[in-house]
Image (cartoon, rainbow, N blue to C red; front, top):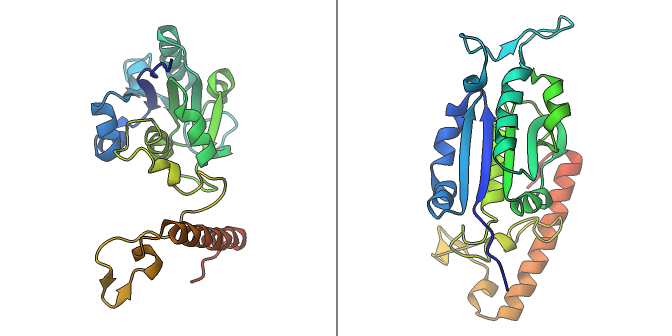
Length: 237
């Protein structure tokens, strides 16, 4: 007998929670929450600061420039959450982490409860990572102002994989990178001819065997091009 998975819960810890508001309350993420497929809870790091000024950052030891997020608010918040439920993943967004990919999104989508820790300013005190991090994730070899955007990318990629979130349950299974490191074939819709540009005849033929073969050939061709682009670091038409 199949036992339905309980609603996923994702807790996000952020120093600037307002950056998360609009994306979490629109489109697929909003519908997923309305359908009770996922509960997303945002925690303002300042709510867990000890002093009256709600200070969450301080100068780094060693004399480097920039500000570092203090350990106390993170320990307070994460320990509170861990007392309330078990978490399969505590994800830290960091340029030092593993590059996020579809395989990792698939893995996270099977979890029941996830915490995502979004850094900001220069860094988070290293003791927070040492104590709590189960996963360290980067979205690329570049640096952002904070971890809120990577957190949103991870959440979007994970939530759309939860059964029942997308109207077409097979849509996510056909996405790029679901079948290994391959990209999806080109997609077309009506009208069949627009400004002199025509949809490939094979897609209009109704012949499923020919269409599947065409899609496979296009996918292989585009995958080869994608690999060359990423290897050489430049785009060509």
